[in-house]
Length: 224
Image (cartoon, rainbow, N blue to C red):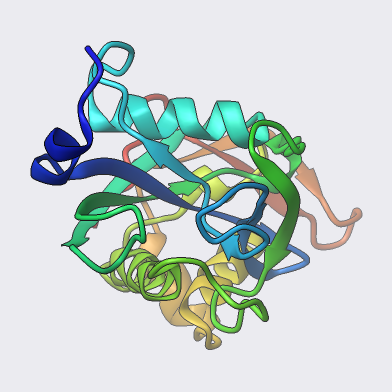
């Protein structure tokens, strides 16, 4: 069904936007895309797109489709953050955008430029260094705050970890998200005996003080 211009004015556009986080060299990064088309052509944005009711079974399914279509990314963890709405946030008219954040290990990401994307960049979510399209600077801040709240509530960001990792690796990932160092002793006591961490029969670091390697448990859920 094709809507007339009048009908488009009556019905808001529904979109999804995704802050895709990863960690590299102990730094938290977010994936940004440079828009190829209007509106806001050549401006940087979070990957996003319009809900397609004939294709998408849910908003989450729409977010996953958008990431596959725009940057060739299949994600393991996606979490809804909040909703942005209003008549002025998008020059096309009244719109509703549902914001998600996603977590994925950097070695699982083969982000490539695809549909309606001019360029991609991995940026510091605190200071992305780009002029953002729409209200995506506010959305990014909201996504980062939501992620930090989860980790501050003692959720373990295992969806950002490689298949095997040490507790030091995990602590550094938590520090990258929170933006400040953590006391090693306090951190180790907090995660001691966590059912989310499974030790494996392998270690790294030499013969004298090898570090135990871990993996995440089957069916791990990122929740505080």
